[in-house]
Length: 318
Ligand SMILES: O=C1O[C@H](COP(=O)(O)O)[C@@H](O)[C@H](O)[C@H]1O
Image (cartoon, rainbow, N blue to C red; front, top):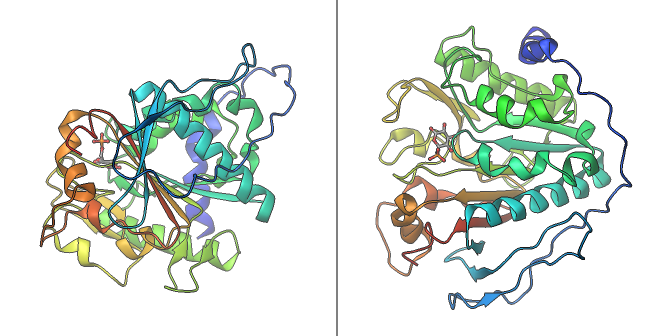
């Protein structure tokens, strides 16, 4: 295990530390509590958070909130830009809450478009206000390719996010890319078990699976989440924590992925979906119809809180 953990952090050794910047006053981050009762599918637009002029903070132009079909809160934004502003605050607030409660924040990233939508977190005020030293970073799925490969979810996150913030290299848990898919999945599951033993990761009292503080999930146009694809038997895996796929319908074919019991044991999940090309599965999950064969995205149902972050194109069929 120790060797894997060392291996995980290796790519960070080449990083040059960013030049020291004058530290601005620490901005208090508050945990967002969503208003209850939720606004039901009226799509009534409300003015979002507005900051004092010159405060360096931001203004959401307009957003709609509504309740999801099952558990969950749905936030609809005018644009992906507005969504990314709100996603940064949501993530920073949760990081602050968990860091204050237990001294650590366990966060799980997806690949794909999610990473671009996290861009506001690496800008002021968050880049300076967040206590990055408490962060432990994981991947909900990873392609079985070298970490410097263009298809690597690690590389995507490193280039777009992790290289821009002082998360501690030893707390970034990439897969062991020297192993084939099955070995990489086993190795990652072993790593998670080690982190449970050392109390970095908690376990759900209800399910016995690891309970991450926050999972930031994307969704593909076919309704897949992580590397759990529609109609694939892996969506039914209910024992393993981490498993592998060698016939992914989306290239590259070999990947490892968290299973639904792990995903659904999370304390918080943000489902971040943008673009008209994803409006169909969003409608399947949040619209009024029923379907007998649920898409993977419809199987996301955490123990804790689920928040959908949608731009208006992704919400266009609701
Ligand atoms: O292959 C993958 O796709 C999904 C969705 O990606 P997106 O670019 O359509 O947002 C992503 O969440 C997953 O992590 C990734 O491996």
